[in-house]
Amino acid sequence: MDNIEKLQKMIEECNNIVFFSGAGVSVDSGIKDYRSKDGLYSIKSKYPVEYMLSIDIFYENPQEFYEFYKANFNCLDAKPNIVHKYLKKLEDRKKLKAIVTQNIDGLHTKAKCSNVYEIHGTIYKNYCLKCHKSYDANYVFNCDGIPLCDCGSIIKPYVVLYGEMLPSEAYNKSLYAISNADMLIVAGTSLCVEPASSLINLFNGKYLVIINKTATPYDKKADLVINESLRTVFEKLK
Image (cartoon, rainbow, N blue to C red; front, side):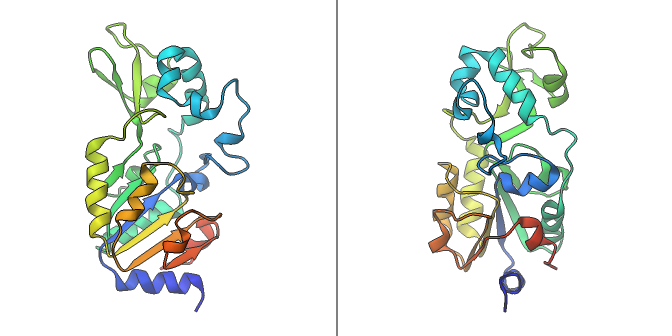
């Protein structure tokens, strides 16, 4: 039995599956991941990527922040790929109970999946730091320079930047979902970013599966590790 067959068998045995998704899940939708050779970390910029995506630069140099953010995170036209669509089918079969995602691209929601917990936020929500008025992503990405509210204050994306806490509601729902799952499928993430990756330690169910092109720090804990492209894996699943 090969790894895909093993994965299929595990899925058929379980009815409380949680999917934990990282940036690799969205690569086939034309969105860059972070740590691959062509990912965001390979971009040559004035400052390290961690600083370009930090709360520090947002306040210290919002012009520089927004130039980088608009150039690299405008995925408004991106469409769900084979992974997102498979998860919707799994949800329709009453097997998938929740998706915990590090992704801010909104593609799980575009695929009409329910119970999507965006622990790093989303580009689709934006708000004024002063009066808290909401703005959509089109306004932020299509305005000139720094997006400003009608009140004159700066608008911030509802995205978790380096140096910020994770949103408590999404994080707490993720804690509950993973703690109660009988199967956890982790895909497209190196599991190097804390505290998100430490959520894996809460899983006490039957099967932990990790699907990623490269090794992760949690591979030894997994019941099944598949080091293949996600498209290769998910196009073979039923």
